[in-house]
Image (cartoon, rainbow, N blue to C red):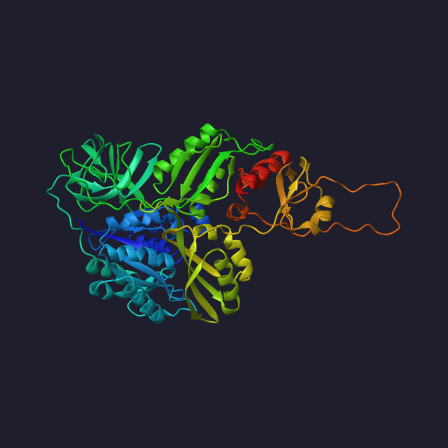
Length: 609
């Protein structure tokens, strides 16, 4: 059967997964009466809740006798480790752009890599049924983006379709005809070339994604570059420098058919398949016939830029809400995650019963923590830290820099620029984007962005939108001021009393409600001043047998600050931890004993003096 391999590229929430749902349905991959969940490819619970694609997935459909393999790629830069390698599996890309928002940073990130590989794009302007759609201006923005990314003349001569994936149609004009997706199918067949492969050569395949399957072991997915592959065939894995990683036999060959992976007896050159049977081979390795000596050229895996310490929960409430609390099970779970996620690095920490977990960004690590929490784990998590590098020539310290694009009302733009300048940011571009909004582009160290998002939403009254993208490593830009406020710390264990919380409201906003279990060293609120303050949240009202002449004041508490996982990770300082359990997210001091905290503070002051 003839083949076409394509990837769908878009920014977060521009409609990639919805589009694939429609393509599968209209091509007959589903039965008419088959019950299929909305956004069928977002199979992960967190993907469904957050409306984002976290893991790259592959599907296939048949149109007019041609099998089209489609890869749905993550749009968020934190999961970019998936995107970069997937483009090596395909011969064309569909660039999906929102008809109102236009091309956004993650579109730019992946499109730049696709154009550099020489892939010829098809531009699909989606959501033209929106009331604020501006498809023609967006098309001009896409052309300008391609030109800025050094697209060649063939890539700039791209075909364009207008669509509404939600309504299930695509057309060459925004006004229709609004019938079905046939124009997109036909354009893929005519514009995307067939895979350039050599079927008569020995088997070779570049592993582009990795998955740990509980039944089949390590699954390596990629496109067969030459030859054929079948179960029980001997193969070997070569690293990027030609070293033999391991030798073994293929236990199973899986191909993508609709939403399912099916075992096949023969995988042919050009098709995208998953291979089981190897235990050490990883992404960017070449899987090949035992007689092949040269590896396929592959891009190195981008290194992590952010790390956190995952440690055993040692608070007084440890083990009361989760069943997986020991360092042994935490270590096994983290190593299993790292085996299937090459953008993650797990190492032993200098601290006791702790592990250093490095990844691409706060969201990627927060997704891992949330997943473990739902599996019954209890963890203590440190503040995110950037992963520094050393310049091999000068020995200078280098830190990761991010490109930040912000859409904000003009009245708030001055505050945003000032705050990011304080965080060592540098304004690159500032221009009006219509509707009284401005688009700012800044280069900011990753350190400066940790914990900034909540402050940004407050400063812009919730109207600002911020996108960030790894740019490069640059020389260290000096110290950045942290949180300006201190915290309120419980001084004893028990259940918080409403009367005590009410009396403490003058000291700052609370993070807990009455009847919340607390312990000494737990953070229960934010102090309005810069220092930490120990408080008693267990103190009830003194009662007497004398009736008051007037009516007692009713205790009316202000709503507490709702601490989500991402907000908690961004909020804490270096001497604080986030305690994560299946039922609760608590903030605490790393050292629960007040005397130990004072001793550590004196030592830190002496070291900096």
